[in-house]
Amino acid sequence: MIGAMLTILAALALAAQPSAAPPQATQLPPPVPPIPAPVTPVVEADARPYVALATDLGTIIVRIENKRAPVTSTNFLRYVDAKRMDGFKFYRSTKSWGPANQLVQAGNRGDARKNFAPIAHEPTTKTGLTNCKGALSMARLNPGDATSDFFLLLSYIKGFDADAPGGDGAGFAVFGEIVAGADVAEAIFNAPISPTAGEGVMVGQMLEPQVMIKTARRVPAPVGAPQGCVVKAP
Image (tube, rainbow, N blue to C red):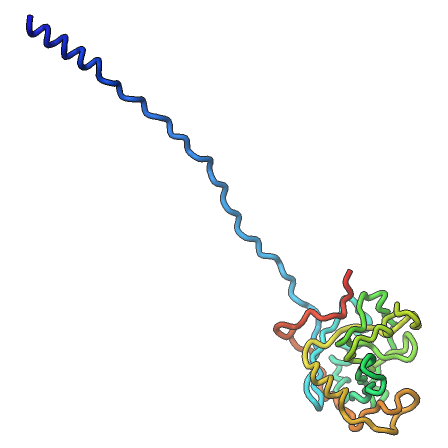
């Protein structure tokens, strides 16, 4: 009798114990998408030609806009590659025109047989270039008669652009610009001038002595070459 009672009490005690809670389902966070690798922009190598003009007063490096002004650029590089520019001279400085019209002019001042045939004119309205400070432009008398002479501009000469108000509608053909040696161009500009040499507007602008281009050679693009100014904004 007592044993039966103990069995019943044990069963009741066991029934009174709280049952174990069922395990809760664990909710996992959604998968995190992979972080894409950064995209490195593709930078096209600068394939434009560069030319070093080694002069009596130092070296000037110019960049040639051969894609925008192909006719004028091809002409200039033809002189360089044939080594016909060796011995050409900077012979003119426009100091007498004041600070707004500063340039130096170079070209063949010796044997005219070194000149190649004249080239077609490429106006700035066609090329999208401009005669800003540092520009390399072709010298001419009339459109289509340019041969070997060129300008290096030491100030922005808007009047040289084809669309300049009051201009001749043709202007001077830009085909490159200075990227190194601007101080050498300044030294040429400030070199001594003959008071009597030259004709017409060029009297008082002829360098004496003239500054020789000893060599003109293609060179690799200088590290950190400036973007420049000759390309007009779209």
